[in-house]
Image (cartoon, rainbow, N blue to C red; front, side, top):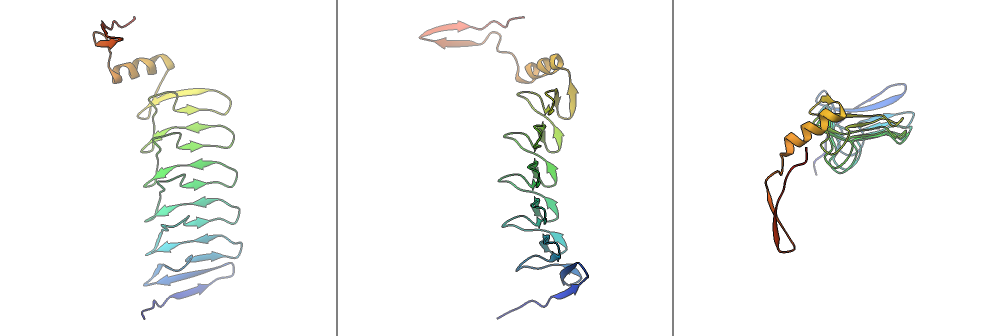
Length: 173
């Protein structure tokens, strides 16, 4: 049977587990605070694969992999107040919805940390205001619509078949 020899440091308000000069514990949190907050560390980096790497006493949870906020199956940060943030490799990122959802209704769509959305405003403020972004560049609504049309290309001249008849599409100006 093999075992690991940890150094446990006890402080006034928390305990830490160390191996080879790095915070590290494989069978539980490497830091346990008196207030109930717990942190999982592997080889000196926040890391946990089967749950949040930080569980704060107030209910906030953070998922970390190899020292970066990261979660693929849900938000990487779930705040106690209901706010949620999706991150991949430490960058705000979500492809199927907003990467930031605040409990007050504010939403932000981000890809690889950049404000970006191709099917609507990238920022929806809690007060109802909206702003349009593509690859971290801000556009007016009119500029955005034009840019999206350019990105998607025109269907002007394309032939489609409808109920057995062929039709040539003409773009409206």
